[in-house]
Image (cartoon, rainbow over the protein chains, first blue to last red):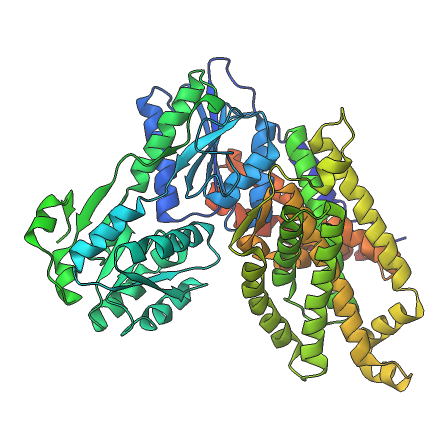
Length: 322
Length: 294
């Protein structure tokens, strides 16, 4: 018989032996996971940490903080969920839908606070927007779409056709498209979709909209946000104004955005986590949506994309990017 | 590592053992580089989740998922055998096509299965914790799949598939319909992957369009790690090695998840996993070298 190579089995033994160190009694622990690392999701994580510090929970003092990213792999997300539940932290923060579903499926007892999930009810994380009465609550990044579309009207007053580039494989984007199809006709506009299943498709999807639309609106689609520059190029070349829904994209070349700052969303999530650490039950806390929406404008980008922003709009902005 | 995380690694390892058995059939037995699995894994999840949410019993839904996987494999085989498209390219075409097909099946990118009936919560005996029961049921499923596979590849038809992979020209000379064997082998392989996708969706809270990313890498890693741990030309041992490989691979990830104590961060996870697997692959070679020297 051939010899077994024991080394990998040794690794298994080592993994079993890697036991988490014992915690001090007055120390709270928070475990954070995200499906993938990208600027908005990272901002949420950093916001959570900052808010916890403000609330008196500081890493290294009275807070044990751990963070794991699944690096885009759902098998790993599932395993991270299992690891966290086994660690029995005082709260698990799960960022984005797939990670949140994996964690919620893995535990009925450990408090779970999701964040940056657009429609937690459709994702079945919570039964309704009311307090769940179980171990789950969180903060949604659902955008007030009517406010977004009012902004589109202010930027391009005679807009009839609104183009949208998005990944049909992203749950958050599919929700937005569905709602826009109902909302836009009420405002005298129509939606023209362009699918970008991968980041590299964003540019060609945007080009397919040229001549068919008066303005391009983008939600917080991961593919679009990660390659926003490709969209800006098309906007400049073909004089199509871009309206974004995350304020970070304004500095990258969007004309305007009425959006959520993901750092603020993270801080809001962090305050919710702090309430749980202080003894409140997650089941008694209502699922929240972002409380803070800010208008960012970029007059320079507007000029390059062939329009001029009204003085009124520029004046009402929280931030004017030059 | 906690018991929960230990059992979690076994649970997910067992699900990916089915993927690895499927990949073993295509890569090792048929010598067909098959990337269809990145699409047939979420296909299985999608079919299963949609069937369960529309009221079918989880058992029927799971079987439906395996059949859907088989059809996906058949089409890849057909593209290769009948349309003469290169094997790797045929599987890539099928993989990208399945992405859209899965979105159509699910009617969107995500179908949650959090409070719905699943194979696991329906069969779970009262008084037993779910995190203990899930790996137990999976062990039974994986052992049954492995034994069925061992048996199948010793039948005349199974041997014909193996002969096709080893030497297609020789097989044809012996009167084997090699094209048909490729179709059959690919169907069996992707049926296992579809089954794994269905079980994954039922244990992880639902099906998601991003669920397939990297399936082929995990499947291949499991096959190769397994072969390195238990090298054997005997089919019964080779399939056992593949199952062990899938579970050991999950322990590498568990180890990587616990590696922050040596100053590694979350973003290093894939790198740490790759390094651990590399070490596992190199050690048997080193041992062989050392044992040859007097």
